[in-house]
Image 1 (cartoon, one colour):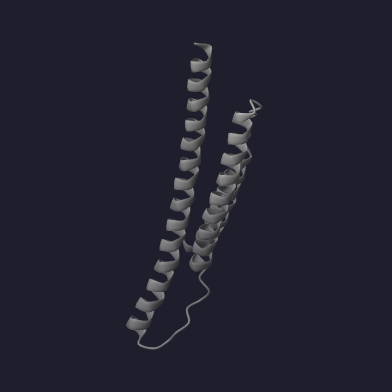
Image 2: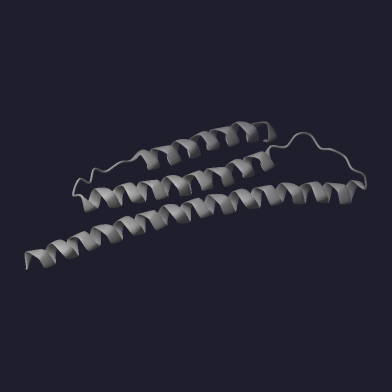
Length: 127
């Protein structure tokens, strides 16, 4: 009976690890998708500007395309880090040496906070 409990418990731990990994992957896909939309919107605005003005006028430097590319890159980095964390946790669960780590959460939170502050600084002059 004890072996069955241990097997069920270990199975639940691994399934929880997989659910966490998939949540991180969904977050990284969302970041990449949002970054892609930002880049495409910047291109759309340039095309609309060309249509309205009839000539190629280079508008003042907009950073939305750069921000979009950075978000896509952040999504890719997050996917890589989440896979690394998933594998690390799986190994710890197998060897019964699991130690929780919040490094991935801290990195993502810090990146989003910095990105948010930079966006606020970028948007403030436009209000």
